Image (cartoon, rainbow, N blue to C red; front, side, top):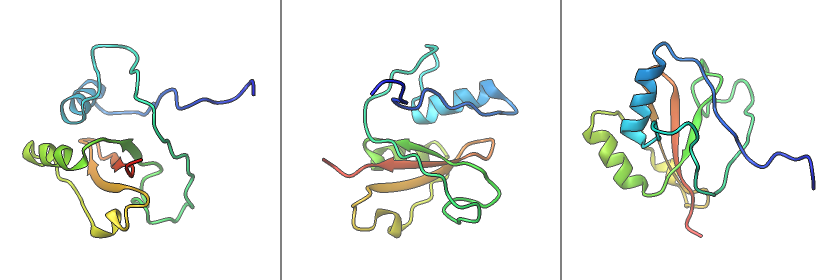
Length: 120
């Protein structure tokens, strides 16, 4: 099919201190800062608008960034060691059919869900 979307090309949002926030993402989550384009690994992406009153993420936020990760447990351990608060809940791991989850908040209050998809 021609004329179709093939993936997410970028995520743009406002920040009070863009440089400091970009450095935080690089330091804690490994985002590249030395190149203008990040060539990501292939994998699943979920595009899902939520009902305005959904409590899946805080009601005062219009969005939540979901990052696909590999090795959720070592990443969580590294984040906690560096002082980043990590939220884990048993129901987020459930039966594993959707994978495993943890949540953090960046220095500007943006909520981030870390998602390790199920193997295979």
